[in-house]
Image 1 (cartoon, rainbow, N blue to C red):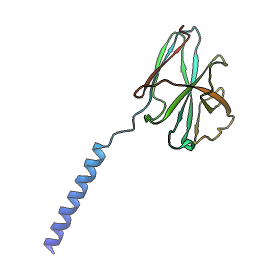
Image 2: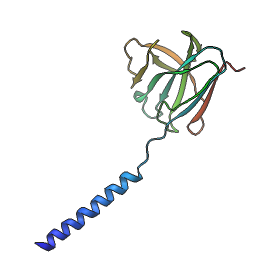
Image 3: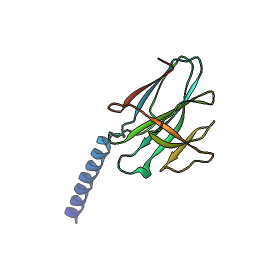
Image 4: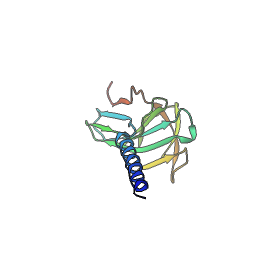
Length: 146
């Protein structure tokens, strides 16, 4: 009986060690890093989108990321994967200042939102987003710089 108890204790210890090692070596998913440079004299608000390269039902749009006049802000809005595509849409004082035809996603004017799996959020409006030129999970958006 003592042999069986020792064997059980040894196996339990090995399993716990393996579990702790796998948990400690696991890393958080990398995030897309977006730097917003606002060169205007007014606040701007951005919505960002991720298009899953494998499963378009997993598309996400999220907003708003606000950047004050003549300020720079860095945000980490979405998980990053090199096979995904990323997009942006911007407004200033309620007026659209950056949109495109590269991606069609949802926004909700005037309040924070997140649309997952392409579902329309309450009060949502479908708009066109511009491609976000990211490299290795990092990108910069310049508003008002010519």
